[in-house]
Structure formats: structure tokens, C-alpha cells
Length: 165
Image (cartoon, rainbow, N blue to C red; front, side):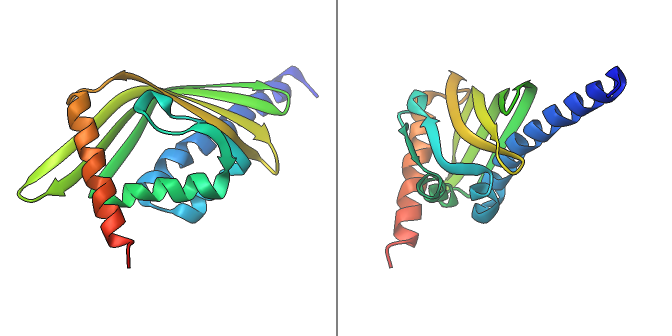
């Protein structure tokens, strides 16, 4: 294999890993739970402790079902920036900045839960790239932490009410 061909293969490999992470954000916002679940290995190491959420290794089906609570929001937008993929054999890390906007209507007003953070996705080569772990760290809450928490509390309530039948 020529140097040029190896460089192209390495570039395409990095782009494939980035595409998985981009699909992670896109599937969340589209509420496409089948596509979201397909991105993961059977178990996934989750560290969302920075927002007071799950820190554990769980079955991917459980994580996917947990994320369905986003259905309580009227809209979300997980925008990824400054994405950098590093490949090491059959493992990859994809680091990115996320601006995650969550909007929910309550009575006559909209609540905004916005955070800027860093994602670190850990992938393994398994019939293409699959996410084996993800860590979220928070850089800032542009609308404030209280606003973020209030929006999530409202969305969880809406989701629970819609799924209690």
C-alpha cells in the first residue's frame, strides 16, 4: 500500500468514527431510537455525572430507553463542533464540543435548558465503528444551571405523564 493510499484510508477511518458521533447527536434530536441504539456496543460506559445523571456501564438498550425522556422536550439541538478523532487500531476516541439546547413549553412560557460541554466518545471497531463509552463534561450553562435543571424537571414530568398509561 502506498503512503498516499494509507493516508486516504486513515482519513476515511477517522471520518467514519466522526460520522458515528454525529449520528449520536442527530438521532437524539430526531428521536430516532432505533438508529440511536444501533450506534452502540451491547454495553456502554456512560459518564453523565457532570449533569447529575448516570455514571455506570449499562446495557445499550437501557441507555437508549433512558434517553427517551428527551421526548418531554418540544425541541432539542445537540450541535457538535471542533470534532477530533484519534484512531488506535480497533479503538477510537472522538472529542467534541457540544452546545446542547433543550426547549420545553410550560403553561405560557418556554424553558431553556442549554449547556456547553465536551463529549468524549470511545469507539470500538465492531462491524464498523460502535460507541462503547461516552463522557460529558460541562463547560457552562449559558441560561444558568437553575434554568437547565428546571427545563429538565419539566420535560421529565411531561414525559412521565405521557407514558403512564
